[in-house]
Image (cartoon, rainbow, N blue to C red):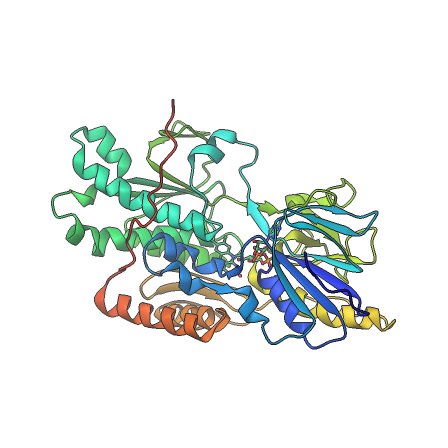
Amino acid sequence: MNIPITSFPRIIIIGGGFAGIALAKKLSKQEVQVVLLDKNNYHNFQPLLYQVSTGGLEPDSIAYPIRKVLKDFPNFHFRLADVTEVDTKSNTVITDIGNLKFDYLVVASGSKTNYFGNTDVEKYSMAMKTIPQSLNLRSLILENFEDALLTSDLNERNALMNFVIVGGGPTGVELAGALAEIKKGILPKDYPDLDTRSVQINVIQSSDCILKGMSAKASQKAEDFLEKLGVHVWKNIRVTNYDGKTVTTNTDLTFEAATVVWAAGVKGAIIKGLDAKEFVTRGNRLLVNEFNQVKGYTHIFAIGDIACVENNDFPNGLPMMAQPAIQQGKQLGNNMLLLIEGKPMKPFVYKDKGAMATIGRNKAVVDLPKFKFQGAFAWYVWMFVHLFFLIGFRNRMVVFINWVYNYVRFDREARLIIRPFKKKRKV
Ligand SMILES: Cc1cc2nc3c(=O)[nH]c(=O)nc-3n(C[C@H](O)[C@H](O)[C@H](O)COP(=O)(O)OP(=O)(O)OC[C@H]3O[C@@H](n4cnc5c(N)ncnc54)[C@H](O)[C@@H]3O)c2cc1C
């Protein structure tokens, strides 16, 4: 891997997401050698992926080179590597570009889409967890409209214009809202020869409310906003399969749809070697103590989505969101320095800063610890917070200018099929 040998302890971080970057920044300019490994050379700002999928933003504006984030840090090394295994006996990380020994290891590998073992759904539905997946979805949506224009088969045309989003969490809600705005504002102009009123947008939620982690008010308001935009919200319905053509559910309800987006859950991105039953807990996450140490180890840590810190306030672990990941990364940075100096570490305490989701133009819901509000002001707050947390001045500027442009022009100009997506067909 071409990493120099120094007298400093070597800390390997797996993953340059919210958690890994926050940790690496804390360890900058300290007497430690930091090696950050990621299979991508960029940090992916996942909360805005749905805008890439719906042509609101270019992918470059929500991605940022990891090397650039940490370019001024001495003793810091980034390697583009897929970590395939951790050998805990020899303290070695095994990757597709070679092996590397560590003194301390931090797993910040995030999460991946959870299909709950349904291989058909995994094969035929679309996920939206990475930038390539979002670009695939963008292409598929646009290709389906192009195909709908050509077919004379009414059933096929309806299926091409039928969108099913499985999961009524923030991802599903935000994507549905964006699609509804495309239906209303863009499709009639782009496809004057297609009856775009037949476009159907369906959100299927297995429980009795959408945005389950938020307040009842936020959930109800989000549902009202979606319905106002013409989105069908189906509650208490569980999708049982999708074979590439038909979505089946645990009721008599079925949907013929060419685009099904699976936003029904994520699970920890576990790495081989750290997959023992005694510390892999619910959601496929690594069970850690209050110092983020993986159960049974003092020198192996986990932070972010992959880590499950169980406490009385969060018996199922902290929510898989950016804030817990950032806070854990920062805290672990301080703790690792204390540990190396032989001082006692401080337990991690999560400060809940609230949650928010946007449904569309002037429509968002915000739950802060002390205030809850919905509507246009919430939408401005949502935009400000997302701009603030984006990495890189250029990205912030580009996103801001795009949003202003889209707002004024009722437009989304990145509706481009740059890399055509070949949808798997049922054979
Ligand atoms: C569509 C979507 C919308 C979201 N919206 C919100 C939101 O509005 N608000 C919010 O708070 N949260 C949101 N989240 C959740 C939030 O993005 C995650 O909780 C957060 O990214 C977790 O940070 P992390 O550092 O743990 O993992 P990630 O940010 O996922 O980073 C993990 C990193 O590890 C790398 N990696 C994984 N495995 C390996 C390996 N084997 N080898 C090398 N590298 C590896 C990955 O490439 C990635 O860079 C959203 C998530 C999605 C998918």
